[in-house]
Image 1 (cartoon, each protein chain N blue to C red):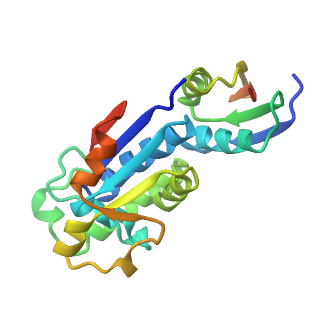
Image 2 (spheres, one colour; image 1 turned 90 degrees about the vertical axis):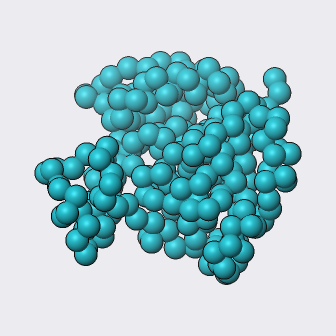
Length: 75
Length: 156
């Protein structure tokens, strides 16, 4: 999937992956896609909840090489 | 969609109890909530410029997981509090948990309003110079003005 920005939150625990996502999205234009990599298993539900509550669509949530990979579009 | 509001009353100043207000406030702010945190009594410790003094005691903390069981008579020995604090900080760092400083900075950047309870500042004879600058000073009446109309109101 194409993305405009990537943030590697590996090794960071709740709530950092979400806080970093928020910060990354703030600098992006509407429609751009953020790729987030995380090792925190809680981030799976957190990213979905973040998408639901902020309206930034979560395009995909998967595992790659033992890490969690998310693609989120800025609304 | 109206903005949701969250109020937190932070009354504790130990390392374990410092995390819930800052994590909840920063996360709510990230989700677009308008957040205000009222720091009173021992919560004032969390507004100090230097957060490295925030500690945790092993004494009378039976719910705290310990690597080895520690009898109370050992918990109260000099140095045990510093050791417990050091071990907790190491554990937090190892697991990639944000430091209190980092969480507080995120809160402030995100516009979380932090209010120090004027009464307890006076009670403990603290000086404003000991606290961070970008906070307000106020009382219960002032805070209830905000807290009375929130979606989430927490006492920590």
